Image (tube, rainbow, N blue to C red; front, side, top):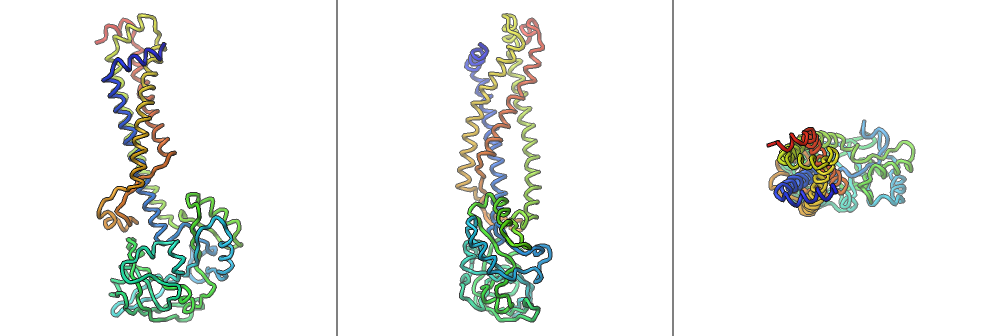
Amino acid sequence: MLFSLAFRNIVKSKGRSITTLLLSTFSTILFISYVALMDGSHHQIIKSSVEIYTGYAHVNLDGYRDEGGYDHLIEDADHIDTILKNDPSIKHYSPRFETYALLSGEIKTIGSLIGGIIPSREKTLSKLNDSLIKGAYLDDNDTNAIYIGSSLAERLDAEVGSEIAMVGSSVDYSIAADLFTVKGIFKTGLFEFDSQSAFVNKSYLDTLMMSQNIASYFTLYFHDNDKIDTMTTKLQNVLPSGYESVNWKTLLTALVQAMLVDSIFGYISISIFFIVIFFVIMIFSYVSIYTRAREIGLLRALGLTSKDIFGMLFIEILILATISIILGTLIGASIAYYFELHPIVISGIAETYKEYGVVSDEIPMNFDLFTISWNALTIFILNLAAIIYPIFKVNKLTAMEAMRYV
């Protein structure tokens, strides 16, 4: 009986029902889109920072990340290479040798990171090849060719074909020096990286640095990077003692913390949104219910108890909330899915925020069914919670008071 009364009231009061539906539907769409946009922008920044050069995971000697230098190098790189090659969870991997040296152009001398890489394998692990803007990328048989960042090239006043002198220290701490020719110039959008990094074919750099069969670390790309914590833990179990497997969450701790802080402020904004939505729905429900006070008084006079009135009004909002949440979720999820495939493009945003790791003008949304589900459930609960106080207040009126209520 209560369900029949509730359904009849919804159909009878079309204006009130449609307004309630629109309010809840719009709130659901807005909430799902906002969270999808916030998560999407975070994923974009993290993905860019990880895939440009850092990689999803590293294998290195204990102490390397804290102290660096030549005292914590992998001195049997072939052994680690064999272990990684036989791990079915790893899709791509490659050793890297990193050192710091002085690079000299015609006018300036600048301290720079010199990375020894295997060019062909780096194509599947980083965006170095994709970031080429002038000249050509490195080849596995290159000798004294160097691949430098765009800002570093400007600081050295170097172009493709320019000669750059390098002076550094080899693994045995003897002087290492050579004259390189700029083969290519890259630009990732990460200002510090572009202004301080240069790369050389590892096999050739090894001859200068006395680093044959030596690596600073191995960078990895798993088949399932979404389960990166599980993957690195499993890998840690098969590595020899003294080695560690760490993922991007540890390698990019500062970025993770920055994203966490941004998320906290984002959820503070969402909390304010919750409060506003809650009171908007409650005030609208309060006004709607009190305009029906005489109707409720008549029902009380006909024998319905306070419990029956509560049940009838609660069923009304339950039906309307269910319909609006389903509509809002379908529309909001569709928006999130569409803009995940076709990101929003804001021209110039990458240039403006490049120091924060933004390397693309695209801002995608994140389509995640779990996130969308809890977003929809939250709005649904708000709808139900907002009706309780108005029902409680109107139920305090006696039948006579309600029938005389204007």
